[in-house]
Length: 96
Image 1 (cartoon, rainbow, N blue to C red):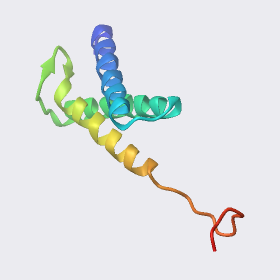
Image 2 (cartoon, rainbow, N blue to C red):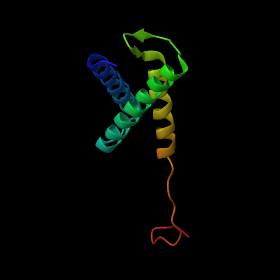
Image 3 (cartoon, one colour):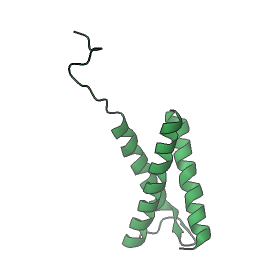
Image 4 (cartoon, rainbow, N blue to C red):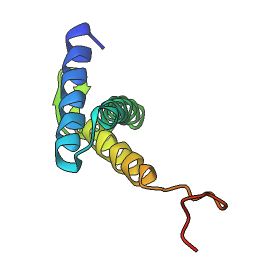
């Protein structure tokens, strides 16, 4: 991969993460979380697309189809896992 395609991939993945953050809302920590998940998912989707030789929307050496799909999948799974609330028994704020 060339440096321009890596930069384009970063820009697109960060845009996907920022739009997901805008859609789901949250603070600065959530924004960083979504941006990180989006970049990891984008890179993973690109890698799987190249490995399996899937071509959906090719822009130079960057295959945007599997890469964007990987970004959306990882964002969805990460969001779903972040909804888990831990409940510790014996907390002073628990209602009886």
